[in-house]
Image: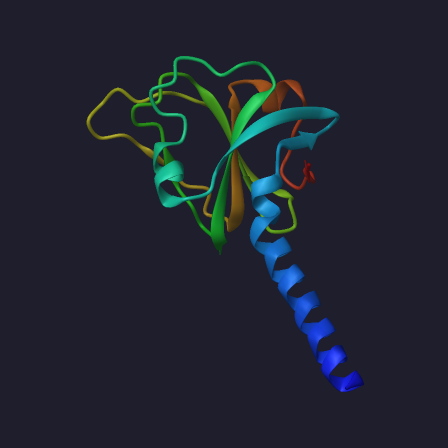
Length: 146
């Protein structure tokens, strides 16, 4: 009888752990670095990541979009149909900055250049242009997610 309770308890712990892992990224509301925090929208699905900040005319101060990928890999971005310049920050699984594209300009052409970090990331953060420079954000800096 005790063995059955132990098995049930372990199964319950496993289920709770799985639920926590699958919902962890959805609970991120803020990304902080160098004492600067940004309320973020999450782009987690393929559709959300493909749209990103397209067609938006502005991004409020201290706001951003956090792209969450399924696995750590190389993820190029482009600025097609993006109406405002952005800083794009690629972040690895340890939440360290691996690449920054500062003042990335919108693209109005049919063929847009691709920004390729050539470094593996699990996340990418888009914020208003110039903020990474103003806040002295550098590759290797660690970000905190809340």
